[in-house]
Amino acid sequence: MIEGTKVTLRIHFGGIMEKARETYKYKGELGVNTVSWEFYDISWRKFLKFCWEDACINAPVRFIWFKEFGKEMKTVNYVFE
Image (cartoon, rainbow, N blue to C red; front, side, top):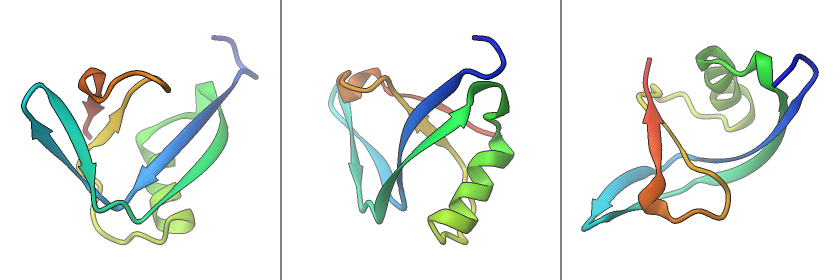
């Protein structure tokens, strides 16, 4: 993707991910926001800023779990700092 390309992300926050047999379940969600960010600008710091300012979460972020919209939860991946 080139600079200027926007990506729409649906961010669920405030919960925990649990392994359930061959898939995952997200429990305890506090909320969800949809954001449109420049692809080149997505970073760990940007997610932290989102958590602190938009989601009002002060707890440490240990993992960012992600999957393509519409895909099954068993396709989920994660990144960590």
